[in-house]
Image (cartoon, rainbow, N blue to C red; front, top):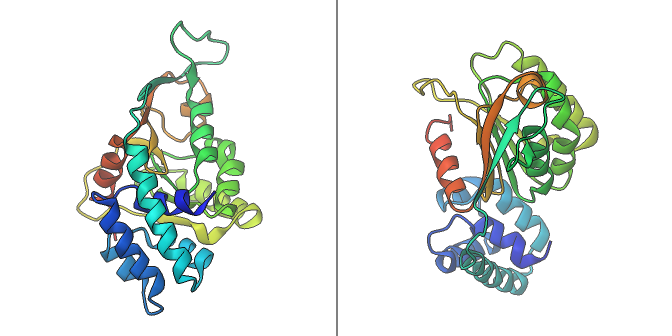
Length: 245
């Protein structure tokens, strides 16, 4: 990944990419800058740390990368997606996909995980190890590439703790455990029944399937959509509004 795309990934949510690029350049050149300063400026601290490690104290490279990153974001926004959403389904084994349905839930989730280059978020009320084991190799691999993986901890799933413990072991063995974080809902948050996996704030699965064996590749009938574009950031902001900080 080149500097422009990497910085663009940090600026992708900014309302004004050019001004945000100036702010980001200041953070990266300030040796006293902190994670809280990055968060206050509206950036994901983990992603700012990735940039800091990459650019070091090279102020000229930082300035150029931030300028090119803003241009990358503006160029990306000028391209209208030709296919902003696709239907996704889980069907019982042996069931033939109906005409017009090209994606199954399992393959869609694997694609979202594998294509991530900056951030990956997973939210589901029910999680179990059969489903997480299906995703664990891909999840471990993206953390080893520096992708920030955040899982919103479900509050009623009886098998989530075991599944997440085993995922942590897999990531520790084959990836970078420092890139994995487990988030929780605020104490006053409503019951989170949504099922979402978002990648790089530009693509997301939104549907009925929990991250369970039955939901992804079992006997359940599940329906959802793979969406692309700016709407994904709205989904993430909604989730973040109820997340414990």
